[in-house]
Image 1 (cartoon, one colour):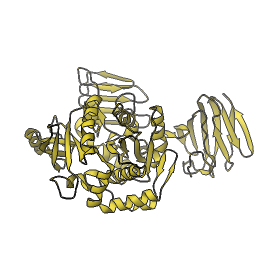
Image 2 (image 1 turned 180 degrees about the vertical axis):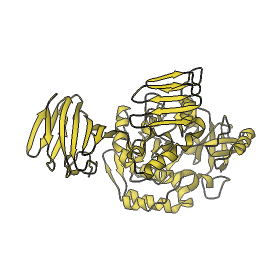
Image 3 (image 1 turned 180 degrees about the horizontal axis):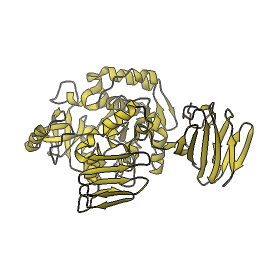
Length: 478
């Protein structure tokens, strides 16, 4: 039986990395560093450790199909535990620990946020192996990042007495994000580490500590899991029961209370980690971990730089030319452009908050939206019309549906479409088209072995995505 269960927490929204990161497709699903998405890199980070089991991903229900597809592309099997809404990391870990015990064991949980970068995977695995040994002895272990500057964006952990050979230390205390002067005193003291948000402990250790510290969270999560169900690789919880669960973080709920050797609670430890870690919390943090030229510039996509220094430039859809810039971030997507100074990148969240307040979809959605069957890209829109490019994966099918307010014209660009229109079922091939009148049941399928790509022109009085009445759906959507 596998003794180590990777638990990947993938519930963040990454608003400070807007416009690349959006609420409906956040940063952990993006390949910000390297070819793999951050989630894929997190899952692969433990490969080669003895006793490693298949990963358990805790994610938002809306992201379930993208997460499953990214695991498939990585060649991994695993389960996705679906949260109907976020309740912070303590309930997420509690659901994972309860589920792990339901499987008949008490594995060591290696709990990792899905949106962190670790450049030195070998050092990370060595450190995890040390932590597992402590966790098997009943300890709750966290990693502290060896600081290299007086960072004000992270919480800090103070080391206590050395344990064993000195590679691990007692947890003395947690401290909140400091001001710069306080952060400098922590750096000078030499016994403070950045709080990584990575934890290693047995499922039973976490649950016992939680029962002592936050029994209300444990009770709500037990009810939510008991009232849930499993659907293939998806684990669903009871929405009403989970809605009663208080929101809290792993640190606040439990870890901060383990310092000082409290009677009745597990012993805790922190292991220093120097492995090129970053939580990539904002654009300046991403710039720091990316490869740079001699002038300190980092870029991706169709970018030209002239006379620039310490600049991050990202192009997603067109040429971006930067001249004479210093210490700036320029990010272009097909529907938004961000320009920010390195020192102000934490304030990108304020822009997202304003967009949400104005009800603008660009805060939540990319122009290209991924679905379990493929994707669609909103190319153009105006009064009473909308044009989309649609891609359908081989063997995939959209739901059998109809619309109250719009008609649709479909033109096949490549591949073959099987179309259901009312009582008719027929094929539409390249350069052919068909028309779906308002109010008619219809379905689009790709019966072939190559991707189907088509253009859809919608026309009508209302073109919102919520004007869909589903009659049948392969993916269980309503």
